Length: 308
Image (cartoon, rainbow, N blue to C red; front, side, top):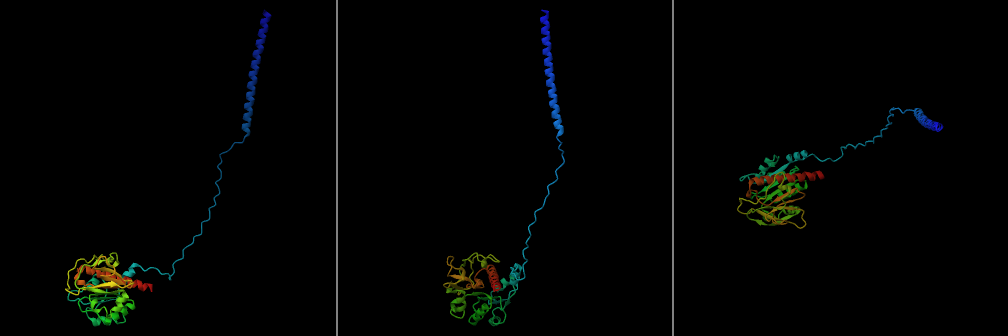
């Protein structure tokens, strides 16, 4: 029994020793692996944090600038507005107006607008002398209201001035008496003709209300209200000729654009005919309307000159 016990103790001792040796071997292998890993780590060079050099930047070449050629002296540049206004106020204007006993309304209109002019009143001889002079008038005004009338050779001289470039504004009440006389070629050239006599003033309607003659520099309302100064032969009605380039701006019938007219404009805006009498209507309206006549015809006149 004792020998069996001894054998068991010997076997247990060997088993313990085997376990210890196995553990030691395992520990030794683990250390060898750790040492190998450490050695490998030490053999890898360390990466430093040295910053990389900045990239080389080569700027792209700028596009070549092409400068616009400076304007030459031969270029036609538009005239400043101030130049046109100066021309209007320094224009050569000849005025015949025969209404001294009842008031020079055309003269008042020119004075209020600060125009320069030659006013001969009703001196027909002085008027004809100026028409036949060597002066190239910019605007000729005929205010023939007071029954004296501009007739015959006056219309020949006025037509000659139109040929020389003058603008013309005519107030006339007696076309029924002179339509077949020496004014006829001028009426035909304008593109209008006598229609019939108008014994007494009547309401006048604007047929072209947006036209500059009613809006520049003044806004003028239709002459619907009248105070009849003249008891007969107040004016005439006019009509357009076939194929006419004239425009009826106002008349006694609001829906008629080719007849029953009392204001007509023709020849590229340089000629105006008015076939009613100023003093049958309110003075304030007439003054503004005549200022517009003058402004419009002079602008048309200077525009035609610039186109030549």
